[in-house]
Image 1 (spheres, rainbow, N blue to C red):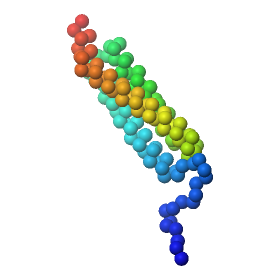
Image 2: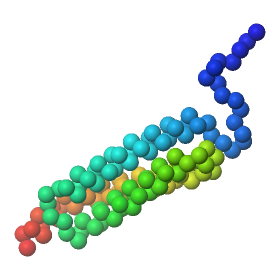
Image 3: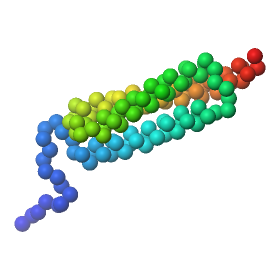
Image 4: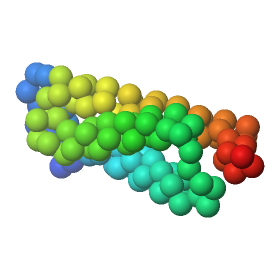
Amino acid sequence: MESKPQHVTAELPPGELDPIFRNGSVTVVGIVLGFSLNFVNSWANNPVPWHSAHLLAFVPLMIGTGLQVKALAGFLSTSSLKISHYNHNKHYFMAGLLSVAGGILIAMMLDLVGVGEVFMQK
């Protein structure tokens, strides 16, 4: 007589995710959000004075971090076990990730062209 392994769960209702799969997503979003917040913190504590040009990087960084927080909150909700809710949160996370990446790229470009130094010389 064959028995099922104990780690196999019962059949899931149609349109729902296995909670274990969702838990991995929560972990990934939490880690990426931590990196995003760490970059924002490091960039904000940079000794170079801020100027209006830095808003070009600041805005996408803040929007992206906010979207990642919204995605994490959504993934922590039990409703994210429904595939439609999961996909909705996934889109928030990806938009936040791309926005933060864009903000980091802009911040690097501003540093590369020496925006802070140009304003300091005036």
